[in-house]
Length: 398
Length: 159
Image (cartoon, rainbow over all chains, first blue to last red; front, side, top):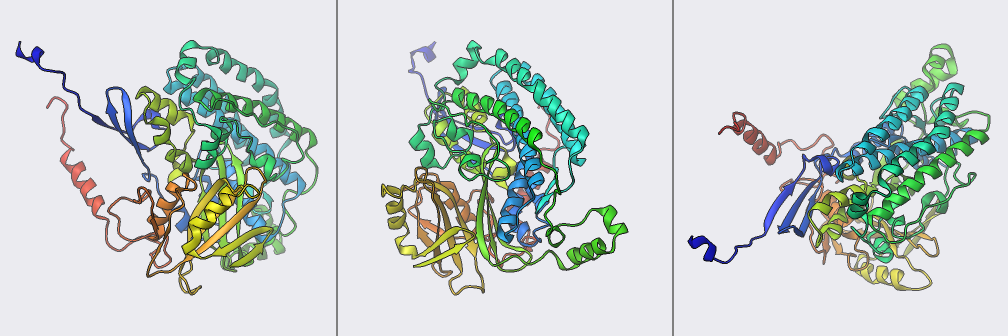
């Protein structure tokens, strides 16, 4: 029994979490140094999904680079497309017609809803609440069906175009969406009854991963992660794009900057999104969905190419020579995507291809925050902290 | 100092030696308050400009709602610039990425290592003279991964 006499041996344990781990939401790898159950050091390793989107875009025309933006944040591809189109439109100095602006606002908010419900689903699943996951995927399916009705694709949509949107919305789609907006508020309440007052949920989220407002600004956080700390910063309000200046909505802001407040912010954003969609449907103006300059940037519809000489010429010129040359200059356009601020910085050298396309991805900034959130906390809270910053590695690694 | 305006966005070209001093002033000056760093990225102007690289800082003032772009030219021979991590801690990963993609060194950075590419990768992918289809030679680490996969192919849990 000599072993008992010896003093207890302690040593720090290094755990590699991921890249194949269900709660890292993709291929994120964290190297955790643990002292018992306390995280001493946390080092995120990213880049497993790096496809070189920025390099690829340099070899493509502005039109060809559009589908690349789908693959950034693949669960909210619609808002990435809109961000890209807005940046290119601003560079060319064109503007989408009113109807297209309203349609884009609608699809952006639909994306926000589908992204936030997949977030609450997986976040709750990570923290041990299974039912929310099943409930929210039911509604997500409904939204994806609506996307399919709109443009034929469910995930990588590539629906917005430079100078408008690809096709007009059908009455069937509008009716279906209106029905969704009527029913969805009840579903939000359903999720909330499951977790909002749940004692385990409160214990796992309240006071965890706290970040103050000044610190959040200094870190360059954006989206609900920044607003959860009480900073009223929303690009839809500060730099209104599309139809956001024509609709009425509030920006939910948290107070304590913990996991729970960020959860509350996102749940309130769901309600605001429904409000925006409803207003957009009610005020949807009539008119074209593409700017009159469109033939210079975007391929005409296939049926017109086969029937109409003018469209055939435009199609031929666009494919062989590429779109019109962009004016020389540089532009940074940011949009509020579900994850935060997605910025496109495009440098044009006066040709039809971007000289440099930089994607400022919110997830990239948020992953860099992980050591700050996790170090000094418990190992069980690492999962809560990964969930709360709502990352998608496709966007982080680009 | 050069000031360029394009589509209502302001770019200011500054000297790279004074980057931290200027950023500190922009951040601390109460009437400016550029407390939010949106982005840092590099641009390679190979053969287009006399000085090859440019590091671009996109700043924003939360209180006064201004946006400003700073551009600092960085030469190829001595591709280094001072790190702005002491001013905005969020600059950390942006600078790492810029180093990864362009090979621009940020002096005073707490942990300047590759972030997206593997640690032992050769070359800096976003440079204009880097081939778009990737390098001719295969990355060393890829063979290692294949060898490891071969080795563990017959692994059995029963031991």
